[in-house]
Image 1 (cartoon, rainbow, N blue to C red):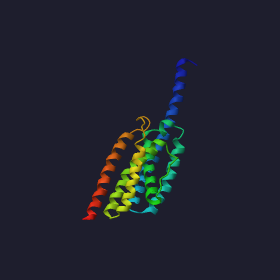
Image 2: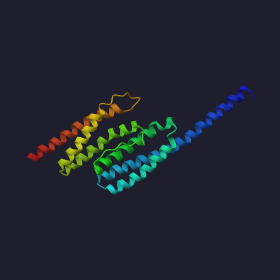
Image 3: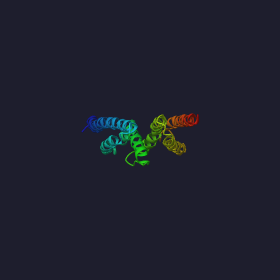
Image 4: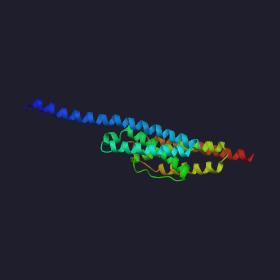
Length: 198
């Protein structure tokens, strides 16, 4: 076998490897879209106090996450890519939102990379803020203040994470958004308290 034949055989093998990964990547994209869609539905149901519907979607999303993990767990270049990281971040946000609102609890999701967990937790404060504003509109200051303390606790604990962008991509920006959101929410709660006095 000549040198040129050897090159062809090697590159045929390499090409086949890439083609197999590309097929898995396409499948991962499909599952990721389902996870993002289900995450949005869960959040929407929670905001409308439709907890049974949210719970049903959580069962579905868990199956999708398991399927995604089984497909890409051993393929680091896909598992740690933006496609998978971002959909799992949405999943974390939705499931934690459900647990805080319905079960008054926060859980560690061990079926996702810690990067997705931390980024999802950081994004969660936006949904909690929306819920606080809804509670303030309904006149439930006590619950609003309780949720505010949750946001505060998340922010203060996450702000101690001093890691480079390569470890937690986009984290610093999310932390800045959280800080701004925290300040605005505190102002809105104070305004509600003041308006109640008059």
